[in-house]
Length: 128
Image 1 (cartoon, rainbow, N blue to C red):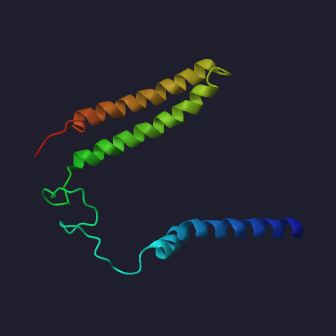
Image 2 (image 1 turned 90 degrees about the horizontal axis):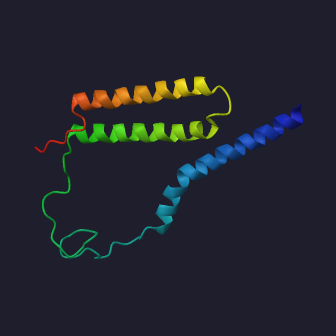
Image 3 (image 1 turned 120 degrees about the vertical axis):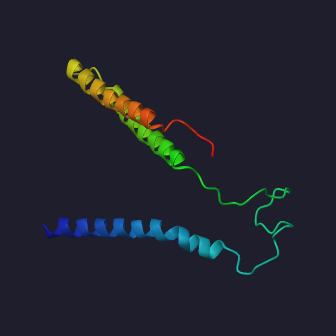
């Protein structure tokens, strides 16, 4: 009993150490790889990255809330498609009618979400 408990504690400590290493590792790597002195690497425009052309306008652009709603709808449907792939792989082994009804309900709810977003004007991109 204590042998398995100590083994489990060792695994737990190893996973916690690995988690901390993955969380703090990028910060440590950037600290050691970043340049220590400031050099005059900035070009004629005063930007760190330069393509040879002067920039037009400000770097901060305000996007409409519709852009973010459109992105959220895209992410939601991408996740749902990822759910449908494993379901399609095991489809037809047992309970064919029940599986078909469950998939029809799932896709139907997704279709209602598209109709709702369409009625709310999420897919209409209006310039301001």
